Length: 329
Ligand SMILES: Nc1nc2c(ncn2[C@@H]2O[C@H](COP(=O)(O)OP(=O)(O)OP(=O)(O)O)[C@@H](O)[C@H]2O)c(=O)[nH]1
Image (cartoon, rainbow, N blue to C red):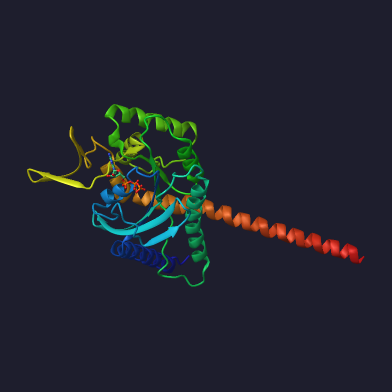
């Protein structure tokens, strides 16, 4: 059987696929990799300061309300988004951060839940619509949220009903990473106990948070890294705007009369660890899970529901027709 031609063709097509893939990677490295994060948590937990600390520059000043998008959702909650370009290990990242000031401030927060859910699903619908277009828009902006950082209040007790309800309801729509805001308000021992308690609650209430999953293909180092990250959950974060420079050693700190919390020191808080997870080690995994699992599930759910509705309508029509025919008879 003359296979030479086929083989050559296959090799050529594999080669062209390979060059297409590497040129795609090259283009995304050049254009920047989009990564979308949402910050949710009660007022005063340090979300804005966190964002400035994460980006290592002022993105939101505390008084500012200026943002690229500023949608008034309800009296107490807004959705504001900020686009920031960062460079991490030679890779350009187009970070889009969606903040939700005012969340949790009302007595009844069901509206805020619904608005956040609608926002997440709206982004999926946009992608679904774009996928179905004959001619795609090359400038389409994929706004699907790859990670939601949920800020837990450092109470030292357990999760509040509000935390449980939000994370439980939205865990199938977004990768949720729980964090403890202003974690420097607790001692090391208190924080350790609080983290343990929160993880027990998450387990008991079967809250689907992002658990740094390892796969069979992962090497030992990656498995170990994931185990360590899982053990650090929920990440205790501390934000700061201050830099001290002692002996030519600039350090980001939060200063207190009794000492300094070093923001980038893993022994003091999980800020550096979380930054590395988001912008480096787990960026691809969070993007992949969003596209391959969360979005795919949403898409299947949505299209099956639409199909059922169509079937119901056809059923009604057929019945209507049958009734009309029997009346005529
Ligand atoms: N102790 C401590 N204080 C913090 C930390 N982060 C921010 N703060 C302070 O907490 C206050 C509120 O910080 P923001 O960053 O504005 O908090 P927010 O969650 O954005 O709150 P809203 O703007 O009300 O939505 C400010 O006075 C910050 O300086 C932290 O990690 N530890």
